[in-house]
Structure formats: structure tokens, C-alpha cells
Length: 68
Ligand SMILES: [Zn+2]
Image 1 (cartoon, rainbow, N blue to C red):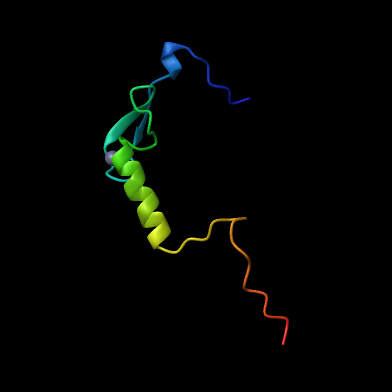
Image 2: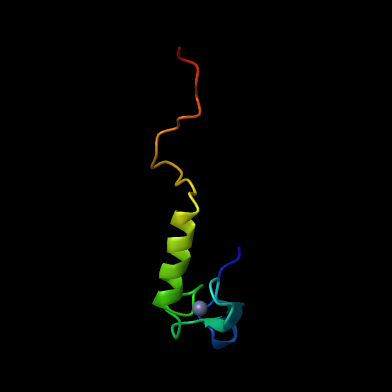
């Protein structure tokens, strides 16, 4: 349904880098989108990890305290 056509009119979707809020475009000029650069991508990943977010499906669930 929401299929992106490879037409020029649809290839320059404007968005902001998630790290530095720089305006970028959703095209091949920005291979690290939604980040402006690899650096911003790594920064975002680093912050994401350091904040202790859980990665669904990759870690055991220790919230079940049913055993005693
Ligand atoms: Zn950036």
C-alpha cells in the first residue's frame, strides 16, 4: 500500500538526523539515514545502550519472580 516508487519525486523525503537534528534527505546521499553520518549513528547506538534499554528477544526476562 505505502509503496515507495523509485521516482525522483519520491526519493527526497526530508527528515532530521536523530542525533544532531541536521536536515537530511532520504536518499542515497545519506547511507546512514535516519542519521546524517556514521558518527551520529554510532552516537545514537551508544546512548541507546548506555541508557540500559532492553533489546527484545536477546536477553532473559528476570522480571518473573515466581520461584522461591
Ligand atoms: Zn547527525
